[in-house]
Structures are given as C-alpha cells and as structure tokens.
Image 1 (cartoon, helix red, strand yellow):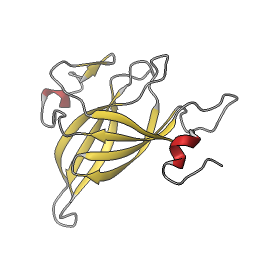
Image 2 (cartoon, one colour):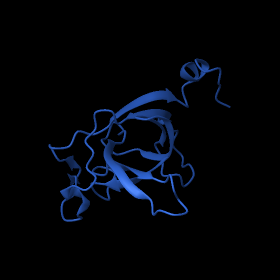
Image 3 (cartoon, one colour):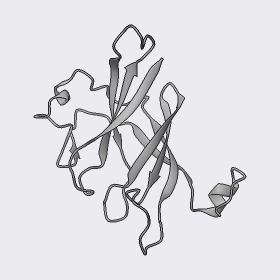
Length: 147
C-alpha cells in the first residue's frame, strides 16, 4: 500500500511557487516497519493569467499513476469582494515524471525549482484541468449543479 503527500517547492511567492512535490511512501506494514519513501515527483500547479500560482489542497488516488486534485484561486481563508475565477477538480499524471527521490534535490542547497524555474533535468508530472466547479456546463456533464 502506498500513501501520498505533497510539499511546496520553488519559493514563497505566488509568482515562483508553482512547483510542489508528490511524495509516495510504502505503508504496507505500518505497525512494524517505518514508512519508506518510494518515489518523489515534481507537480506543476495551475496559474492564473498573472502567472500567480493557484492553491491546491486535497489529492485523491485514482490509479497507479493518476490523481485527482482540488484547486482554487484563494488561500482558503474565506472569500473577499472578488468572484472566484478558478475552482476545479484537476488530474495529475505521473506516468512520465522523473522520480527525484534520493537525488541531489533532496538537499535544501539544491532546489528543484530555484526561484520558480524548474531544473531542466526534471520532467514534471502532467497537470490537466478536468472539471470546473464554477462552470454550470461542465458540472452538468456529471449531473451536478452549482448552488
């Protein structure tokens, strides 16, 4: 059994924090064996038209290489006076992504996305918008509605 988690990478500003890491651990024997890191992939998060990174929160396993991710245009601190422009259920595919576990990128001295620029030796996961939670037409495809 594998368990996944994510961590940010690349910077502390919305303009350079596009990349996060998807970590995979073997938790098949949680009572007797310490979970072992089995893989580590770079995932590009969606960005708005200004190039700012959009927030992502929940991640769910779909298959060996495919995950669903909830993404949004706010930080999860409640709304403000603006209307949401992005709330979605997106797909992350790690099929062709570089497994950087155990590499030089494990050191804080060698970030995988220094100042938001992904190292050329790394192939990131493929991030694809799947369904918008604020678009009535897209929701209707799944028998859902907003409100």
